[in-house]
Length: 186
Image (cartoon, rainbow, N blue to C red; front, side, top):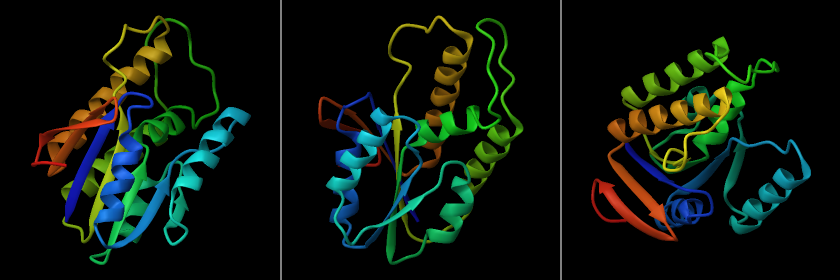
């Protein structure tokens, strides 16, 4: 099994790089989309991403049960592209459909802890096939004012660290330029 983490800021080119890696693998591509169109702007983003993908790529939409989806989809003849982990985290954080306080500690929903733990457990299991994960680097800016925003930045940073430790290759993208942090060239 080969696992790659491609991460960077918003509009850095990380999804384009991940798509290129999938295309160049020569394998059947399964694109796991973690987003859902909660508003018109997000719907437009989804349309843009779909238009870029070749029609022969299979798309699987999964907002929360990522590890179970990877267990089902990974196979030696495939490459699975997961775009993106930070949207997945957001889906999990807001899965209980409740408001968070502006200040103080944030109690994350049980689904968050279960699904995050399941993904990390899956990464520790032997599994066939290749996976490319896309994630945002959200911790390089100012510290957010609100408690929920700080909790999100913290959790995204922790997840990126956990994945980087478990993936064979880690690529950081800025201004469309990839930098290999682990596992060789892009």
